[in-house]
Length: 240
Image 1 (cartoon, rainbow, N blue to C red):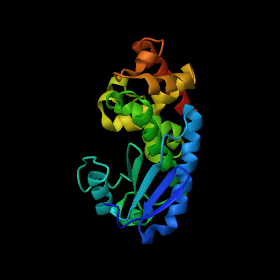
Image 2: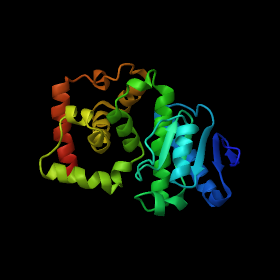
Image 3: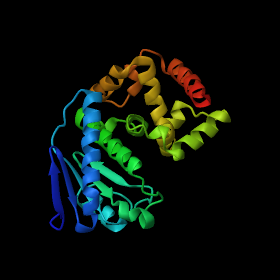
């Protein structure tokens, strides 16, 4: 179904696009290439094969590609907050031209580059994790937010988290695990806490070895001690 798309390739990066999005190809390819370099360094793994990005001109085209090209079942029309969707080594991306009418965001090149890294984290995790289907949402999204540094710039994350810390409303780990919204808001902080306290090698070990989704089996602390220490840590981090 990509017969109408032109193709650009640079090393391990392939970008499929229509003529209207020709001006976005270089930025997209460069962002993905840089993302591959960052994640290859982080995980100690080279790119597995070509990463293919398809730029969708509008929301309708985006949804069609996600369902019929990636094979990912989604509710349509998809949320205006959804800008991209990965599946194995393919990523469908909403065109920057479509932001004004088809998204809740304004297009910013820096955020676009971070979005590419975010999605590439999912690509690397899927390739490296033995049983990716068991990985909990808070872990996968938290990993992508943390490594892409989205948590340092995204006001949709920073404002509610800072307010929660200020008001003493930090959720429990059980609440984070069971609530999709809290997974996106707080998952990165649990990943950050693990790296800060147990080292990046623990993050990599979890990604490469977890088979049952029990992420905290890889840390030496009990769940209760881990949760207490995480809550103290994120409270201090937020206030600082």
